[in-house]
Length: 117
Length: 193
Image 1 (cartoon, helix red, strand yellow):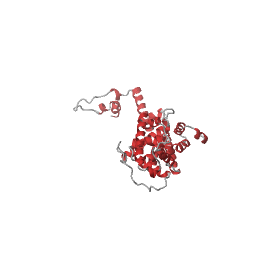
Image 2 (cartoon, each protein chain N blue to C red; image 1 turned 180 degrees about the vertical axis):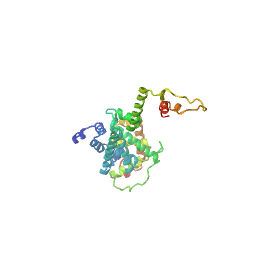
Image 3 (cartoon, chains in turn orange, purple; image 1 turned 120 degrees about the vertical axis):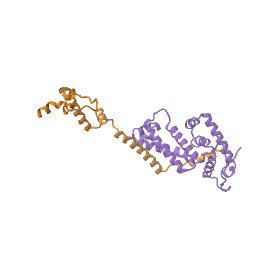
Image 4 (cartoon, each protein chain N blue to C red; image 1 turned 45 degrees about the horizontal axis):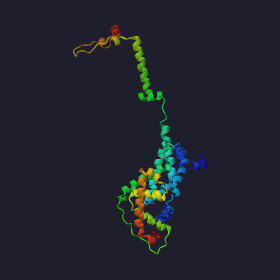
């Protein structure tokens, strides 16, 4: 770029006639920046890391499912300790022709039914 | 960041501060960077409203990458110019205003009276008309080099080409501008040797 560059007066004119941003446009850009900051902050609040207990509860369906889980656990312990006839006198349904007495279907209650007679 | 610190801080430091939630740093960047890229976009697109759209989009992208900005890897101005250049290219291509290489035509002959006073506005307008006939890459390189005043290596980084390619683009662009404007040299007030 020298003094003899025939284009220099044109470039100089273009530099002087540069499009300047007005206040409204600058305010719009600053508002965009603030909006992006707000966007960034919002998901951070929503996605605060959950505790391992909470994540586990959510995975199995929340607190209501814990009640069912506790009942099933208690029942399992009871079956393990008491070993009722129900668990030992299992009768396989091997044939459609097999006839069953009530005592066969509910063997644990056989004695009770006999007594009631 | 305090106001005094804002004016002294580098673009990169301001962007990092903004990425950490400092909106005042973003306002400082807006004041500092917008005039540069708006001037460029308006000159290349030849339309103020379109240039504002492009600059708003480019700045929006800057805000979004701010949290991931790594100081020292790139200059904010180079990054912003690059995005602006690409957005302008997209606009020119979509609107069919981009000119194929070597398909330079003479400018519209909407010439003012030869006796008209040779004022700066006329020259800027004549240059604009001539620029709009250049192939888009030449136009972008000439505007970045001779109006925005960037160095060839900076332009190479912005346009993602080599320095020699920048020199070639600006040289060809200037030759075309001289050819186009030479027809109007009396009217616009300059002489060749």
